[in-house]
Length: 452
Image (cartoon, rainbow, N blue to C red; front, side, top):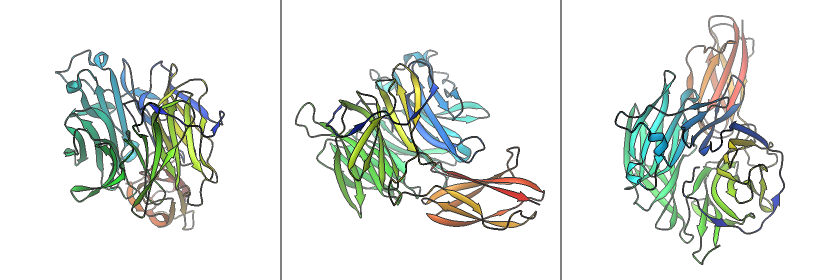
């Protein structure tokens, strides 16, 4: 999650570990690069793994996209009426990334100037025929969230404007939008495991969780007494919502903390996270099973934390830079935490942690795809496949030959948690085929089939 307003949090002491086994990847070393990174795992080269995909903003050069291999400019052409030096006038940019079918990036791009908020603009950028194009979305104050539902082909967008929060969706090439809450509201959108939009938001100093019901929203109070900051929202292995947020009791300076909220059978429980280090400005949340993993910026270093049987613990991930700004975190399909951040003075980086083991008996297994029919398989035959999925999700099954070209049409499938039976029709020509299953959660599995 990208947090534009710097939320200053004082911290209480809990265990902090020395630098652990983190691999640091400088994907854009230009000084100042990597503001507001938005990280998702997506299909990379033809391997059985997903790779980090990151959209971000850099002063003077605008928006960029990293596909796991290289970085490219992601600035659509300026509108004919726009000033030619528009990039130089932007005081800040915010990016939010969604990956649609085929792993193609769609980026919500906000150009922001706090001195002239009426001139702030939101553009949805994507690629057509190798070039970036933009769809203008009007005025914005940022706090962007964008997500894609593989099952319906719908993009979902949530952002703040001078008139309040706005929820929008794109389907069939057309954007639709509706206002949400008042001018004082701010929040974040995520799709739940069934593909339904959900919100964690703050209005009138209270934290709420909302789900889409029909053409409206159903909201429940999460925390009414903490004066919360911008929340981060994620879902556990059974699809239950979890929220990370900052809060203040209003007593005075130094009374800001992190809190974690979790829902069980319709009831919300909140707990403080006391973290050593001085101050926290930005934070994000990811889940593996029912275990939360957090990333945040503090005055010591870019920091990673989790909650175990003994409570919350944290560790520094990058000793070279004193600040890991705008951190965003995911857990990849190899059970590793990956954190993208802007390293003060060193550009854009992401850090890969060690494989998580023994996190919880409810932690989901990695996505697996196996051929349950006898192989080699004859030409023109239907073979049975088994997909063991860690959670319910939408997915796409695509076949490739040894050169990487697709074989036939891709198939959209809905996976339930656990084993799923699938079928694939072999082509009329013999050879080697690779069947690749990619879920909307960025999980990837591949199986090889020999065709006689």
